[in-house]
Length: 398
Image (cartoon, rainbow, N blue to C red; front, side):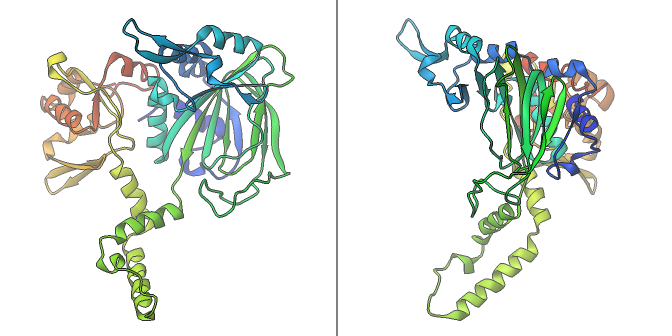
């Protein structure tokens, strides 16, 4: 999937792929000014909040360095039948923003198709899971105090300005679940300065950082933080522990009295490590990830006219003795060899109009598309989902 955001990030940070992700702090500027407003604007963020029932901690508001109680800016919307649904009170929220506040929406990719497609593109690019959080700060409101994240982040400043400070790590490769709380910030400041509209910044896992508009006066800042969680050696060992249950020796009670039992366990563990390598773990992680959320296809609602591949990671398309195997989303599907052109197109990650696909890849493209949608590898390209690709990802036939 070729997404404008990916090429823009690579250009801004001087990268030629995802290999530099997590290696060092780096920042740059976007050479595509129209992209930032295309991704998200402050008003679009507020529109998302207005039209949905959001709850803490997914949607939060901070003022003067402290979290505002949800009761201040939430109201129960009561239907004529007495059903109560918590909704953001836009009048109260507007007052907070005029005074100066920070709004945070976690996992904006769940609610906004543009953010959903951007995260999917980053996942196909990095081969890791990605989510995006949004931060809108008004006037001279403060941000979070100095902290570190347990994942790599790519930050894109979409509107306004914000002061940042980035420090080095105080513990190498810290984790969310770790043997050390890692609570003492580093004294080494790597960079401090103003992030302006169109700026991009990569902060590797464990680097201490903080951002604020304190002392900036009237104005705003909107940035998105793409959180990219990479696999670790500890994750590989946890995966091996799951596989150990297949073997009888690991299911027995531990014997405190006989050392021979420990030796046999150690030998079995060594054999398991040799059979299932870190590379196997990474491959399995991509292939076994469950299908993504999408609108189900119901033929009673109309014909299937357009689709797009929505797997979390690129499907593997393997040619195998006159057949084609497609491995993705925890499934393996087998097609005849003549299906290959249609599969390449339908699984490209780009929108596909089936009428155009049939003209290019053969009449079987529609039948194959129906199978891929039924199995959860592709989704119906609704107008709403299509809007997440418009101007950012080209049509597969194009």
